[in-house]
Structures are given as C-alpha cells and as structure tokens.
Image 1 (tube, rainbow, N blue to C red):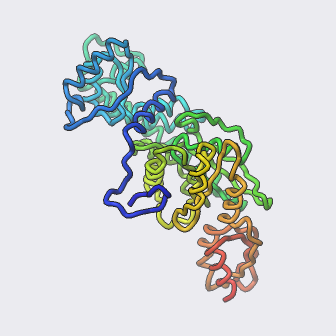
Image 2 (image 1 turned 180 degrees about the horizontal axis):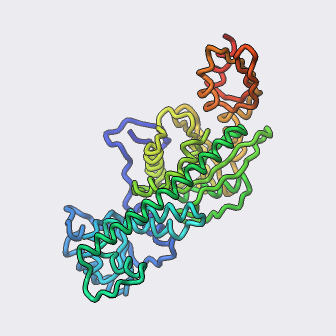
Length: 423
C-alpha cells in the first residue's frame, strides 16, 4: 500500500514510495550542511552489482579518487551503509576520511545533543556503530586510554581488549539510559495523576515541528531550516481556547533509512510519543517528496508499536502551506486522509493554527463537558481502560464498593463510558 497525491491509502504492488534521486541527493547535501560541511560536488552513482570490498566498481573508485585529489577533498560521504571493509578500502583508495549515512547522522546527533540524556543516547549509538569497525578505530581507542607504548600494529589480543572496553562502556550507558527511562516513567505517572493530556509532535526532519511548537506555546525552542535542528525532547504546557491545558512534546525528527541502532538508542526519548494521548504527524506538504517522507515516519512509528491504519491517536498536520500556490492549497482543502481531513497550517504565518487547536481539543476531550460515571463493583475491572482512554478529573470511592468518576472523554470513548454509566 502507498499514499496517492491526496495522502489516502491506495492499493499498490509496492510497499513503499520510491524517493526521487534528486530528493535523495538534496537530503544528503542537507545532512552534510547540518554540521557545516562545504559540499563541493554531489551526484548519484548507479550500482549494478555491489562490490564486497568497495561497494562500487574499480572504475568509479578511480574516478572519485581523481575528483578528491584535484579538489583537495577531505571527506567523502556515501549515502548508503558501508561495511567496515568497504569504508577502510575507500579511505585508502581516496586518501581521505569516508563516512556512510549512519556515520554522518551520528555526527549530526553528536553536534545537536544538549542534555545529558541526549549525549548518552548519541554515545550509545556511536559505540554500537564502532563495534564493527575496531581495526580502523584502534588508534583512537588507544589515545583515549593514554596509549600502551607499543611500536607495532594492533594484534588480536589488543582488538579483543578493545572489544571488551567498548562492551563495558555500552553496558554502562544502557544502565544509565534505563535510569533515564525509569525517571521519565515516574514523570509520566505524575502527569497522569494530574490528568493533563499529552500531545506529541512527530514528523520527518525539517518538517517544521519546532516552528509549530513555538507557534503554539511561545517556548522559543531552537527552530532553524536544518535537518535534526531538534534532538532533545522538549515539553511545554499549552492552553487551549476553552481554557483546558495539554502538554505538548517536541521530539527528534525522523529520516529515511534511520538505522535501527539509532531508533533503539533513542527509545527513551521516543517513549514520549508511545505514551502520548494524541500524536500530531507534521508534514512539509510543500516538499515534492512529502509522500515518501510520510511513509518513512509511519515505518518508524510502526517500529515503536504505533500502527498506521485506523489509529485514532494520529492526526496529520500539513505544514508550510505558505509555500503553496493558491490553486494547490484550495485543492488540498478537499482532501481526506482516512476518516478525518488533515489540518492545513503554516507554522510560519499562523494560518490554520486555530483549527488545529480546535482539533486538539476535540481529540483530547477538552471541548466536552465533564462526564460523571458510576462504575459498579462488578465493572471495576474496566478502571485501567478508563484511566488510559480518558482524562479523569475526580474520583470518589463509594461505601457499596462502586467508584464515581468525573472525567473528560471524546468520541467513541465517551459514548462507551456513557453506556457503562447507564447500566
């Protein structure tokens, strides 16, 4: 299945949308510029058969070597996973540093991390990446330890020692991140006791999430036209037009072919998305590649256990409408995605934000009057579901064992609770 131009799910023989070559090149250049690299040349290299030693054929290796030498290039980025052997051989052939896609994203994450949690997650992902590249990293590891004074190259014993050092550090980081996860769990538990819905922003990197976050909350989060401008999660309180409050969470942007090690390392951060009452999927609707980007986001959400079809927690927010021609914008207003229309906004100008706030209120039950429901003793097993799917404002335990709840809920959940209360 893939999405047509409207964003609807449509039958197809393929399970994904092919990203255009020009879009992939532009994104790779954007990743490079995100850490202030000067891109002197970029292009696509057709690979008919993968070479285990160098990925591409010897002729192309020699051609790129000539470009590197003539333009005095210090770094070549290959927007594709490289094995340790391929990376090593290409660095030798080109006489410069080589980074693959994962290595480049790790460099960006390292530059963006500001909190202790962010730095821990980046280091964990980086060490897992390094594990398979110990031979080429040996000198670096020795420098970190202060050196052993050996004059020869590393032997098998030394590499094994380095592996143990890496593994020990990885285990320590995982323990530290587990503490972070437990702390976040405690914070979420406290938030649930004070029933305030949590709304999470997700989306492809550079879709405008942080700009929208700032527009809604006035938080002043770093928002720039850069890939991965936001890395560390940010939580702020948002007051809706009816006076009700929700917590808005801005998270790291997603990207195509995001390595599974990065998804795993950032799971503590992404759990804010998993536990959210409402997920706003922010799309750069003016980007020609928006359909493929949306598929990438849904792929990662699926890895987090959030299904795409029929998930009433996910609302699509089509951002950057200020970049559209009036005719294109008018036609998009007629589009549906699933059961609900997307919310069209411009985080830059504020257009459509009022409608978005109304949608948030409707989806979180903030626009509904409080509902009082009495749960009979025989139905107390429903309490966990009620707490998970509604905003409980007050609770009174009755002498006969029944529980009286005052709560807010929307849509089908409210109807079900009303039916329970009528029994």
